Image (cartoon, rainbow, N blue to C red; front, side, top):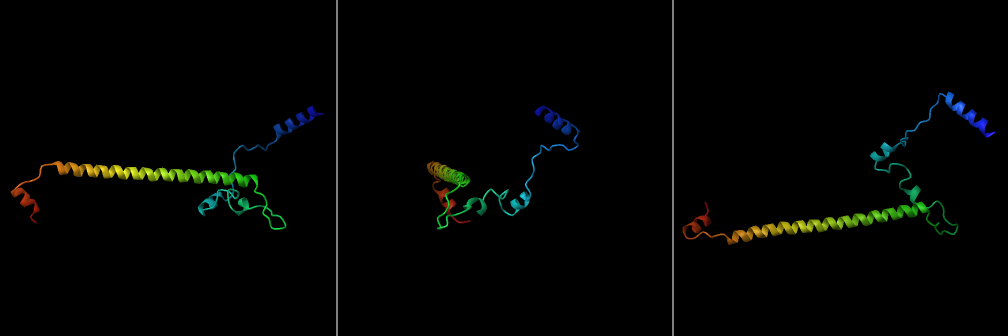
Length: 129
């Protein structure tokens, strides 16, 4: 019974003028959502995905769903990474400023070691022109 059915399906598909599409579809409104500052699709974030679907009759909240817990963990990991990178950036800026100050101090020290003008040259430099 299965063999004739398979032959029938194959013959129908061979002679069918309709083809299967293998391209991925673009979600409707994705461009508009991006332009207006929303998520790429309606299920990325927002009240429909983050708030519970139901609650108990006595007012207790429903237990969080797996997707909500997963998204919460992803956001916490992202927040931790942002804080770590921010602290690294602050440390880098501080060390850069310290190196810059060290270079300025070294130049001033080298200038202080240079020979000072004496006599008439000393008076010439300090007189206003």
